[in-house]
Length: 459
Image (tube, rainbow, N blue to C red):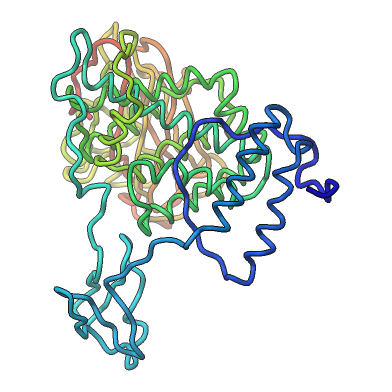
């Protein structure tokens, strides 16, 4: 190799891991191929690597050779466009399905790959229309767990092994090269280990990569490899263990429960940026996996021993105020009314809606989420929404938001203890330009460790 021509990085970087992480495929215009191959030669320079120079440069040479020999990526081969005629391969014969010359806007990419056509009655999938996240052959990974093990714990342990490796890889890639494309490649190299990268999965992954880059390398590194990372990965494992079937089976409803449980477990020590990027990473990643993807990952790492003994699955209850007032009462000094079929609001005046309820002593609460609707514009000053822990007292403020968002919103808080009650409320600052019932408290979710109060419906 000639004298080191240039450097892609400000300083030598850590080499990639020695184990393979799965293939990734992409296409570029052929005219760029020689330039791409030429720029990759820097990976063959020992000066590029901080450690393991011999292995890294050897693998780089193999990589470049593989790219030179590559024959391209797989493409959809059962749909073609001949002139303006859209044709589909049916039993070995190309059949005309549409003439797109008359109404081109009626053709668009399918969300699961392939193409969609609108004949006036709605969008229809042509080509591969199944969603591998929900439609597929995956079965529960542990119908008969090994002796002394549970299928849900083993599945959770395997799943977290994949997620953790992915997020560390993504965080490191952003630290080394602050580029969304680099983060996307790092994400997709893991995502396609379980499921094909259909259009919607790629879209979510692309948005994740951009959000991770916006979060900055410092936040990504501290969030996913920092002091609290081990605790959070463990809490995510417990959220999965507590939510899925005993054989490792997963449903769409259980994925929603995983999200709620994880949000309740996030520790206080995270700063707002770390908290936000963790929620985004977990929620979006779960959306790319679905039940099928999680069941595939449930055995993917080959881990056959799991320890979830310290996972306190606790309790979670939802109080849907459109169904019942759930024993809440108006906080003294306010004029709140229960509106059957709607929630807690005001029937005769505008202003604040504040209600309270006693919760039995000994119940530990570590998460609360209030949801509301507000079809108006909040007044100035004290317009907002809040959650207090306690009864007939606003001395234990858990969280608040000002001004009051509309037309709907939610507020979360993380108490930790036995408070004997809860107070929830919102105030539009006596904005009489809106109808009295425009501000309605709709739903309260509570969760905690140990035994729950039994006042709502299980999450």
